[in-house]
Length: 168
Image (cartoon, one colour):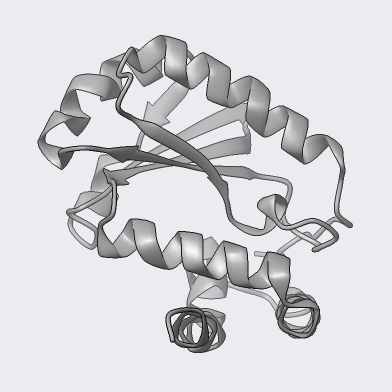
């Protein structure tokens, strides 16, 4: 599998905002936080053109209540990831068979929530780290991967190091 990166697109922010409004209408939970995460949330960072969205819930026990609502607005729930990430519900929206949006539904303030926000914010505020991450991603995109998870795993040590710096 080849990983295809695109130069940063200014419309990614608008695509997130539009989807956020749809999500908020669908889940009807005023206490939920909806954040743009992943590389498309970092200005001027090359990325796979998939809008990653994290929904933070006051209590993760309510996550199942929202899966059907999200399916009603075009998301497909991927249950097989529950084994490796039991604290997350993962949903995908696709157009013509190509993923356009990913939802990571977790408990607000959880370790998963915190590390994704720390990583995003650190890259937004640290040009050198952003450039290093983009360089890594471009190098990795030149390789053939079994799947997207293998590519993601190859970035893990860099990501963990940034999370440590951001949390200090």
